[in-house]
Picture 1 (cartoon, rainbow, N blue to C red):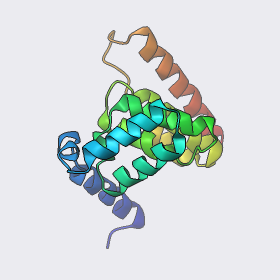
Picture 2 (picture 1 turned 60 degrees about the vertical axis):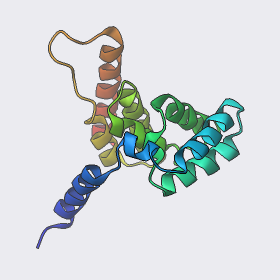
Picture 3 (picture 1 turned 120 degrees about the vertical axis):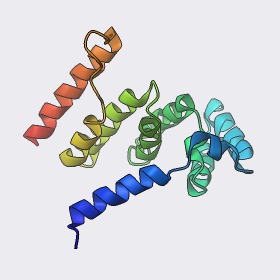
Length: 159
């Protein structure tokens, strides 16, 4: 019989392996309509309508098809309103895509987990998703993100 921790890790791996891809999400018949409402609501600063569209997209498991830029814009808008817990899901989606905004998403996610949820263990897991680049291949922005990651890891160790 597997331990609870091993079971959780196995389920996380299975969820990642079985997660829908961006292309398959965009093939869903409701994706275009809901993403149009989501983007339009964000552009019009209508957070309530954007939240409704996002929840519907997420319940259909097609939110992965949204662009990283709009997901980040949505998560930051939630943060401005103080809805940090609601901002977790968009940050997880951005990080899961491993695109150019993934490191920033993991940093912000870890900060929420550490300061709002008071869960340094979760924050350390998020921060460990930020991988250092190969030798000599880090630009200034990547070095700054790694510096912030290391600072947050020290805070997690103290907590």
